[in-house]
Each structure stands twice: as C-alpha cells, then as structure tokens.
Image (cartoon, rainbow, N blue to C red; front, top):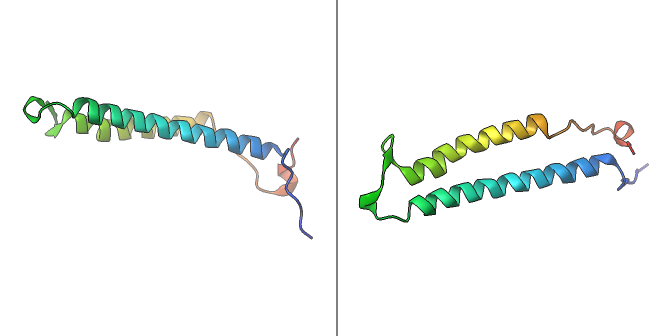
Length: 94
C-alpha cells in the first residue's frame, strides 16, 4: 500500500527553509571570494602584498574565506537547522 505525501507536512517547510539557508551561504561564499580575489587581485603584481608567502588576494579569498565559511556552516547547522524525523508516523506533524 503506497502512502501519498502530504504537502502540508511540517518537514517540507523545514526543508525549504534549510535549503534557502544553504543558498544564502553559497551566495555569501561567492561574494567573499569574488570580492577579495578580484578586488585585491586586480592590482599590478608589483603592488601585491603577501601573507605567509601567498598573495593577499589569494589568502583572503581562498584560505581565510574557507575558514570563515566552515565556521558559518557549523554555526548554521548548530543553531538554525532542526532534526527532522524520516518516519511517516513521526513526520505527519501539522
């Protein structure tokens, strides 16, 4: 016997909210990366500053950006995401 999916199930609302949060995180990551990579990286090579032997634009866009995004994702998962049951009996919350 096949059960139909209830579109009013709260799990769908939670899933859509969390998907939107994921998209926002991707946009933040892209803006961070693009801003530092092309903002600082558009100068002449002779004018580059270096951090740990790497050009500053690369360090801030790729290294620091990665660390910032890892922290943001951890905080997002810890504080904004909810545990959702996959069982139909538990998931039929209205």
